Image 1: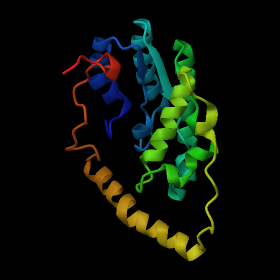
Image 2: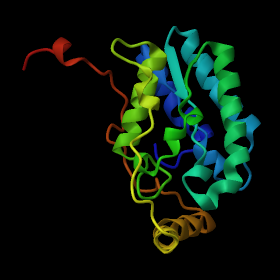
Image 3: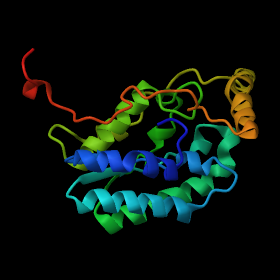
Image 4: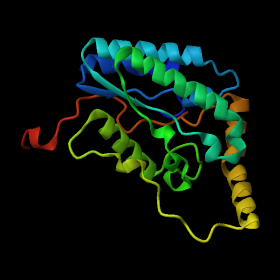
Length: 213
């Protein structure tokens, strides 16, 4: 869920996922951790390792993704590039230990295209979620999947001039960076008060297998 750290994902979601004994599960965590002042890749890796191990040990096929470099999406986030590289190394290493499939979304330039991101630049927009789903489908070897998800989008013309670019960054800073910093200072999260669309994990039944009403 939104704003959750890797430890919280493990604590709040792993047991419910194991109870369902899924055929396939995705485990994606750690991005919120790297945005915190005291980011510890080893700690995130330990939580990922525990989730990967628990799911694969009961026969679940597990997939995950690498993280795009936010510094290519948000100029102000360039100091985070080293942290993102460390997180991706942890993801690949821990996944390799347990045979977890890795969709290397963060390895491709298209992942930094602004058109894949929501206005806050911290969450994917519809096209970004579609590309990630297609990347996972390829990693899982699903019928009809391909590497087309990694193709770059058509070039936008004309490129914005310096003044337009500055105005865009200023508006983003006022609308999203400022409130985000305020939440950090006050110990709040963007996920506070939000409820998941499916707060209780239940089996997903294909339409053709669902009983008739």
